[in-house]
Length: 119
Image (cartoon, rainbow, N blue to C red; front, side, top):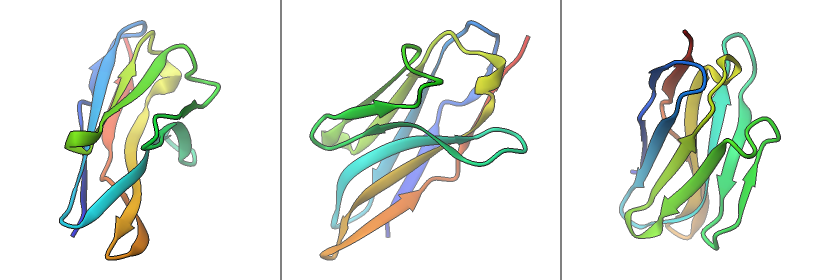
């Protein structure tokens, strides 16, 4: 069983910062790519940032220069540092983990953590 758990969401004023964390745990699960996605109210889920096990990262244009994705491979944990937050960053943020379990590719989503940017 693989579990993906996010934490760190909350309410922040415009211009503020937050740090999200995601831990992916499971016996026999070899973690490869991790990603953050978000779903704003009334909209579809969208990719925010990805991080491969080799260290490559990719960001959505809307967050480039403001968000930074990082990971601790020893802990199977990923982080998202968010700065200069805007009201349009308000969304439920989800962690997505890809890897190998029992010799097969597998991917898992977390339950999500709410980020609200408002004064």
